[in-house]
Amino acid sequence: MTKLRVAFMGTPGFAVPALDAIKRAGHEIEAVYTQPPRPAHRGKKETPSPVHQAALKMGIPVRHPSSLKTQEAQAAFKDLALDAAIVVAYGLILPKTILDAPRLGCLNIHASLLPRWRGAAPIQRAILAGDDETGISIMQMDEGLDTGPVLLEEPMPIYHRSTAQNLHDDLAALGARLIVEALDSRASGQITPKPQPDAGVTYADKLQKSEGFIDWTQNAADLDRRVRALTPWPGCFFDYGGERIKLLQALPAFPDRQAPAGTILDPDAVVACGTGALKLLHLQRPGRSPVSGGDFLRGLRLSPGDCLLGDKQA
Image 1 (cartoon, rainbow, N blue to C red):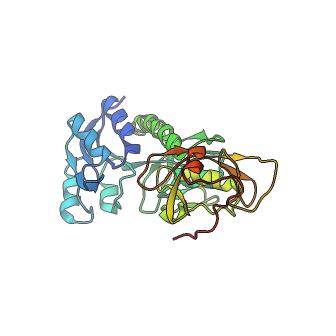
Image 2: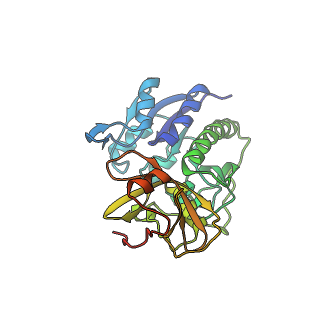
Image 3: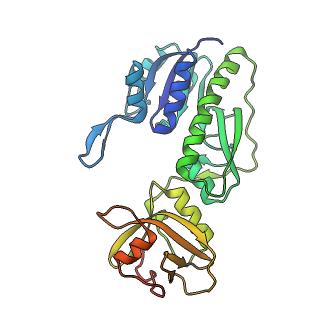
């Protein structure tokens, strides 16, 4: 293995396994770039990002410029005399001056099989779309939105009950392994970036809170994917009795009888949808702890035959 001088540029927990893997592989991490501390939790205390916290524990210098477009920021980056930079969900646009500064360029870990699901939310969009597989692409970055040539990729199945959270964790581990392989191969000249095909391009738009609204008139299979894709963030919800109820976990159900959308079909909180039904496994009322579907019905004195459809999306 050729030891490289690298910078690591990332912010969320998804990026931490890759930072750890690069460190363990023996590469010299000259600096970690991450988003500035943000207000978080109930007290809104300024909190460093997960990558920032991990870097401090590893003893790696941390930089968190608000922009990389200034001459000062670009000069400071160039002065690192890097072989490569690794970028994982960093959150800032990299100008061409930054992209061109490392000898081997900037390598990005992207959580999809490019060119499918370029953009901000590839994991969630893949589940929402009902894709059978996703994966990790190690991409040589250019100035486009996830348009650069691919160095390495490896698929990962999306199982019937996969959630955004467990897929996130599995892909983070896969990305950590592949980036170490890509750095070794890139340094030795044993790998050539492969241009992405023009066909099959899709975009993973940033998630909106409104996408979590549960519309009982929709297909139960679609609603099941929505819950699995959007939990824990932005979360799924419906409105009932003037309250916004969080739907934390659900399961498609196949009841013996049909009923209007939103109708409660049995005491175990099976609810009729536009097509099929959804069993509500865990829910949370405002200011309360999560409960099972049955306990939720009992708490609101709801019975089979009652309807949850009525309140409109706020």
